[in-house]
Length: 209
Image 1 (spheres, rainbow, N blue to C red):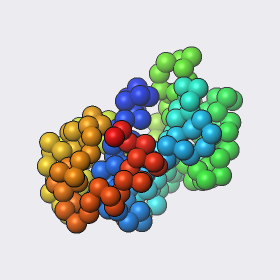
Image 2: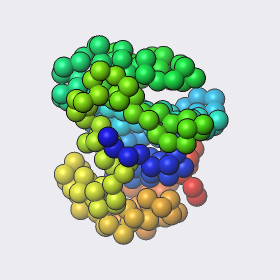
Image 3: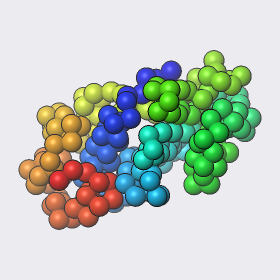
């Protein structure tokens, strides 16, 4: 089981990942990470998709709860459990998160792992652990690695996926939500300016100015 950070830290990290991917790939279709600060009333939503069938969605609610579901399509849990696993994970979420577990956009019929956080419990829970599939590798450690890893992990990912070498110091600054200046953008992608991405960076992602 991966140990997810506190909700506030997770919001900051998912915004940072979305901002970095926005700069590296202004064309949305090629990105891994996205963040929508106005996903729904009182909700913000982070997401990941790798274009090969793996994905996750993470919702942060203004009332304090947060919930995540994902699919690692080559995982042992998904191979063995399939639809039964999906239903079991969906049913393992608490009743107060019914809106999340019945959101059509999240493809609940294709789920290999889930996590939720309730303010009353003050900790993350792994939904798989309440199912008969709890011992099977669900692929969450790998797909959620950038939510817990350091800046160097993301730098290595960029070298592999985007085939670019980017400065560790810049990623470190973005991870702590330092202001994104033209100097930062040029260090990551000299082909764009801050004006090219400002609307999405500040209005959609909600990154701090």
